[in-house]
Image 1 (cartoon, helix red, strand yellow):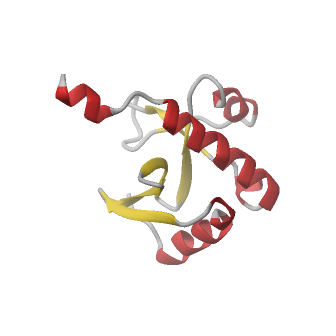
Image 2 (cartoon, rainbow, N blue to C red):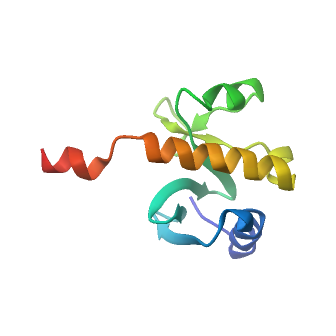
Amino acid sequence: MSVDESYLVYVQDQLSSLGPTTVRKMFGGAGLYLKGTIFAIIADDALYFKVDDANRPDYEAAGQGPFNPYGGKSTMSSYYEVPIEVLEDDEKIREWADKAVEAAIRAPSTKAKKRQ
């Protein structure tokens, strides 16, 4: 996994209407955060948004699948790749990003799980 800096800058520019996002490099990729909540990841110059039952059908209808960091059967089903036509469309990317943020907020906190 890797992230080209110019792609990262492009994605942040496309998401600028959300407000200031924070990028944290991780495992060769990057996590994108809004107000401390991770809602997207970038790996191998592809953008993946957080999904749940509310927005997953959008990705499936577009023929997109879950993040598959190792190319095998193991996937991260809570993140799906954003179609390029959505990333390049200012209105669509905002709509899909808003849904990803909402999914991230609805997701159970891993911190709460660790405390239990």
